[in-house]
Each structure stands twice: as structure tokens, then as C-alpha cells.
Length: 159
Image (cartoon, rainbow, N blue to C red; front, side, top):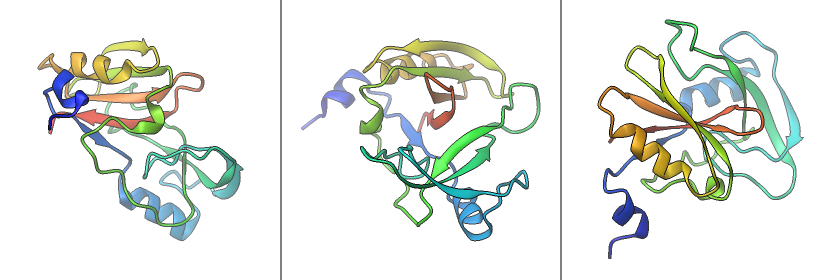
């Protein structure tokens, strides 16, 4: 049986959370890659490893993360949350369920890490916007971000 997602978006996109090593270092040292002292705080996430959000506040580590290589001004550093305990890394070809009903910022980047295109996607449309951006061969990856704070959520790539 073909899922509705596969029928609509045959590209078979890959949804990629932050690297596991980034989370492991932050949990182990309570410092991020930029030397910031980290703390556990109550929030509703989402966790950038499992890509899940809870309905109630939970303990999360707030850290700084840079999703692009530091080669140009588009290499932003911003705040993200992770669980303070080991959680299963998101590994699915399906758009992460906890983000389906959200308005999201979707940014396409070229191989040099420069913004190639961007859009604000209505709830339920971020997957389609990502797929459309990835049909452009000049687009290397797509970042999905929160609408309110524009914090990095996850990356979308061709498999």
C-alpha cells in the first residue's frame, strides 16, 4: 500500500534532526559547541533529536546550534531544545507528525549555504513546499523552522 505522502511526494525526502553527537556532547558536558553553559529548563520543546513535542512542559536542555557550515553570513546560530536523556533519533521518510498542523518557515539553501528561496508554509503545507524547493537542482537542502521564533527544527534532503 502506498501512503498518501508517497503518492503526493514521490521524491522520498529525508527528514534529518540535528546530529546525535551534538546532543551527546551537550548532555555530557552541559556546554554547547560555542562554550555556552547549558541548563535544563521546563518547556514544551520540540526536541531536535526525536522531533517530538509534549503537550505539557517537560525538562529540556536549551543550547545553541548552527545548522550550516560557517562559510558565509547565512550560517546562523540559534537556540534549540533537546531532551536531557537519550531519546530515539527521528528516522522516517514521513514528515514529522508533530509539525503537520503548524505554520512553518521553509528555507532552501544551495551547496554553498546561501539562501536560494524561502516561504512561510501554512499548516499542512511545509512538506509540499520542501518538495517543490528540492525539485530545483541548485537546492542542496531545505531547513524547516518555527514560524514564531524562526528557530531551526530539522533539515529536509533528497535521499
